[in-house]
Length: 282
Image 1: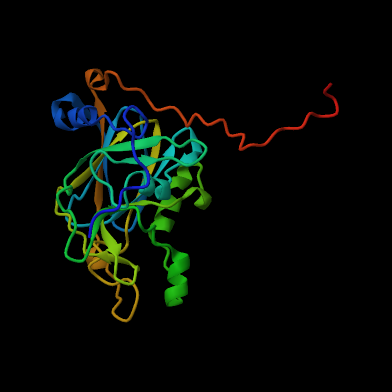
Image 2: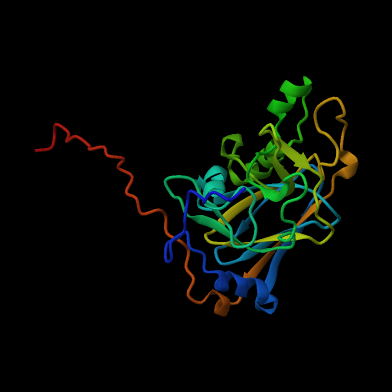
């Protein structure tokens, strides 16, 4: 069956056009970066951290396959945050090298650009599964209560809520995620499915910060998703849960030559409305 063309097409010189040689140079020049922060997020927890614009951060499978749920905000204005559905439209449903994650309206600009992906060669498996998923969202205790009748406080939504609380954010700031290392697709009934995570120890997904960022990641309580979380065969998958590592790098100035943080969308936001003059105006 022939491919149908994508709805959103990038034109040369537009913000949708990616300068691939620039980002490839960042990925290739490992000698041009300095590690400035690194830590491990234990199983079934979350953590938030900041990444300055022009830096790179990696999410790493330090002990084997493990899914992580990623949220991203503008570090100075949490109203600007990852817009998963628009990123899915402008890029694709499963992202990899040179794809971008975009922010919400009225900002609409790239928050990050993916510079390296050790699973880029995974492609499409026999079931139609692909990795690094924008199709679904985070697991949460509300859905779990509906499906099981039980409370469980360590879903990705709850992990992210706890992670961002020290930064003054709340549950209302947690948003749809990038499911890092997660293998998903749509079955013949057009239903969302999740498969075993294909990552091995040392696999990574790397991002270039286009603006100053606050990031948060949950180590999914489903672990590598090799165990059903709901349904008749469900059980506690704690034995397939593993930590994830975070690495943040400062880049040499020479690597950033010609780059600057993207501006917010130039649309003025009037939406066709006119403000009536007040009675005090003449």
